[in-house]
Image (tube, rainbow, N blue to C red; front, side, top):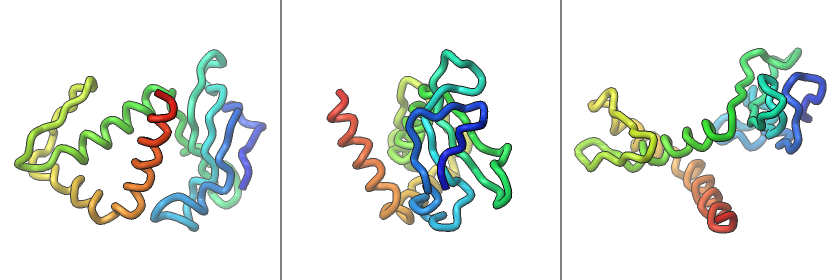
Length: 133
């Protein structure tokens, strides 16, 4: 599926047919396209968007986030994987707080169970950051 250009978010670069590569949800994902472009909430902002499709039309449950929030979520994912139950708490500039200590290990377990999907994505991020920085 190709990125819709008639909606309020104005795509600049898109990942069409994202549903075919959407991790464990591929190829049956409702997330059809990823986009970076002009934010629908402010024409002076750039945002990323996950376009979801119901089968008949574009879903109102599509998510749009400013770039810094997407990066903050990535930081939260990484610090959460690094923080394990009974191990040192990893804190970034976000000042993460553990809400449910007994469940912290679930994040690490999920990472281990899905390492074949998540690790290559983290490695790609590392390589791209090494190129960028």
